[in-house]
Length: 265
Ligand code: CTP
Ligand code: MG
Image 1 (cartoon, rainbow, N blue to C red):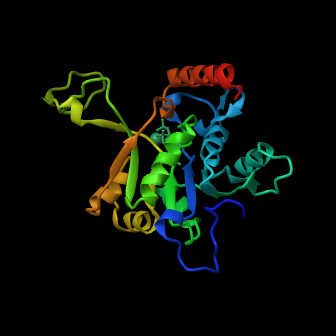
Image 2: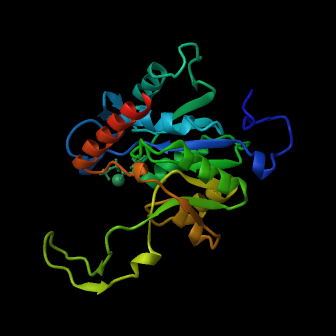
Image 3: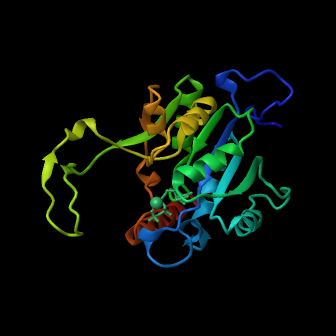
């Protein structure tokens, strides 16, 4: 109980600045765009499953005291034993990684369902909830902490974001793959941001968003936008990129190799 962010179940609700932080890590996707093989979150990067890198990245924040991993529907037992096998300290009891507790729950058909199932496993004393893609295994701890700080400062929803390198076109999507698509508009690039995870939320806001918004979304913050509540950005990081296609695996392994050279990680 040395961590100031640990919950005190018997006490009054924490002030936002002290609110304990839980992280939900959706890891239940197949990884279709990565090609055939194991579920994406279980694919290895330099010998260690992507999910383990992602849990490591979140547990590295001293503020995060609970990690809920949302495993493939048929894989919670496998994921649980992976987490136990990679526990940071040999002396940590099962279900705990260093000073961070973890839980594993089975996921759903869509990312949104998986996040809702993970969120349901977060006890109410956690006033701040992060949602982090297992597919972003290399997010630096400073990015995690910047998101937490902004939520604790009072923002109901916070997303790490980066300016775009490419110009973006809105098109009329073709019905046949590869067919030319008419361009409809070119949004001003300087006003656009690519958003990453972890996205951070006041817990009650995220719960309400999941209860209220039923249509498909690709990130959690957009559900909060639909409630009419403010969402703010903090600076993202290029190493928080999402492993989506085969080339991303090459990049992720190169980043890990550079880290190992630089700081022995
Ligand atoms: N995810 C999930 N449950 C689902 C679908 C996705 O928990 N039913 C998770 C993925 O495991 C991933 C994150 O949501 O960590 C972001 O999704 P994405 O990058 O699209 O991963 P996949 O859905 O696995 O990949 P693809 O879309 O290529 O199949
Ligand atoms: Mg997907």
